Length: 197
Image (cartoon, rainbow, N blue to C red; front, side, top):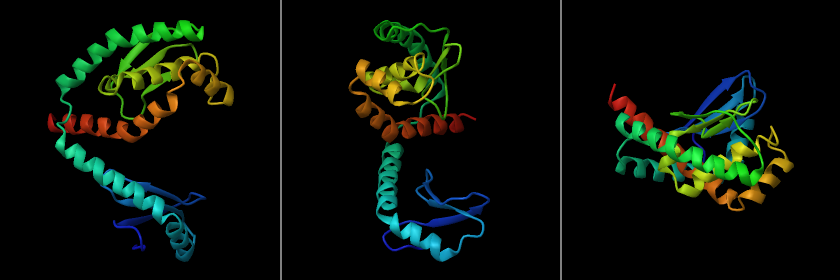
């Protein structure tokens, strides 16, 4: 499928889903996911309406791919080193912010994850991605605060974010950095692990 205003290949995938969605995969290809029986002219209209946003994301992905090509992949040794440094630093930052928020927590686990930067279990155990060591220190802190605030609110309600902003007013900027750059960190890890297989 070709749509004016979009500079890359568009692949259409139909399934039993009920709504339309656009996705840009790591190589820059645009995937349009559509309901099985939706007429193609409706799909084209949707893509044309979203063309400017889709193209902006495509161009951002191209820049990220160029940057990725210029950066070395994370080796297994790099990942072990990040995990070791995270295991020393993250408990300190967690203790500091837990006192500010007024919460307790259980065990802290450092993981090498492809989808999450942190999580908080129902019983208060915290998990953090070792790749946070490759992010700016304030971004790591923002993830720690996010997970600790789940000790007060096990959701993403207004009350949850009110507490996050109270403790960490710069949260939005750090969260934006992670959304824009986190995928590249994960892809560097994946490239390094593939190279060592």
